[in-house]
Image (cartoon, rainbow, N blue to C red):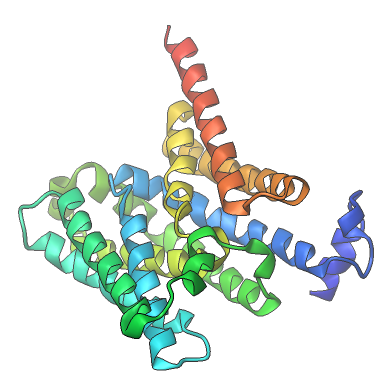
Length: 283
């Protein structure tokens, strides 16, 4: 972290002065790690038409936080990660064994998870207000230890991406053809869903449950408007996520707003701009 602080000290901002506002410098590094995670995963979330899956995972993670707090764990986030992974695997298993549409299955899991989370967090007449921070998020509370963990996860997901991008894309576009090519659909789906579960759970505290779903949709949706091939699609989604993350953090700092909401609004503006650009080129 010391090397990172030395680098940030060179930036022309008052909060970047040496020895000052380390929380802002930590938040900047966290954005540079979190944004690529969302940018990569967003492309497959959009292609697989699983826009509300991350929202359902957020609800299951919230349930895990409530369960971990009720059990007295010092860090309930690990309980949330475990529950979110179980949720993702169970969702994959049910999806393979039913004719119901994925949005219906997501709705069933999501409503159950949020109800269970509220039930656990209010059991015994407890107040729900202490969980409000998970709804809005606070990127300035991120610690160097959690940033290191997210960096490791980013590396693992990037390696997963390099090894599975073609199979994931084919399974999303044409499942029957993917099966005929010998692609193990269940394993691919389960691995991808677990990756989304871990990212959503670990970043929910800093981004906020209310907007985390947007961060997994808008980068890919924006890139989809103007990309002509898979390489452009992935690259533009990554760049869009990083740009919105950095710009949103600056807006949050100088405007005193929620970082998650600021990032989401900038992503929405980028989507609107690329949508209009696509309309002009099409005409």
